[in-house]
Length: 167
Image (cartoon, rainbow, N blue to C red; front, side, top):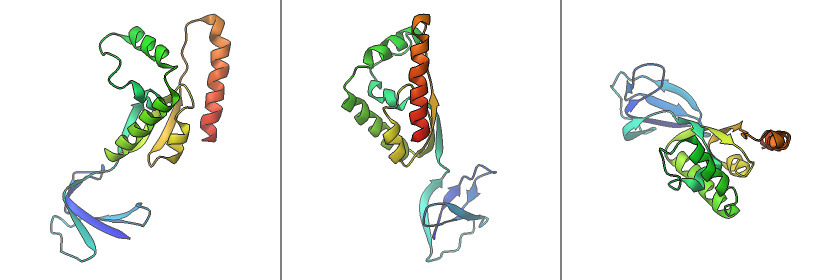
């Protein structure tokens, strides 16, 4: 068990608590939060942090498999231009895509993200997410405008869906 406190604790269940004590088990699961009313008594078993403790963040819209395009696609050009850039990047070096996705996953965790809803068009990042300290929700996406390719696109995305369920 670990016990810790800070100047303020945000719990998402009310106003911030001043100098409350959080007790967590060895896996990091919070077991209790004790409201000290701002009168924390010094104790050898409580680690005090100068600052604020907040719950983990949720990234509710991510494209981890497109991390390699960060800063590459100019903003403000509209959806059509965005999709053209994505389509032309599908053939980027696989290792570059994986390296960027791994780096983005690490950066999100460092920044406090605990849960991420990730838009997936391919299975390229599933192994990264399987090993991540972040919990991911895979939101499988398919798009296209050519009716001749619709059956192929649906079969392709169903394969991605099956791989997501296995990961």
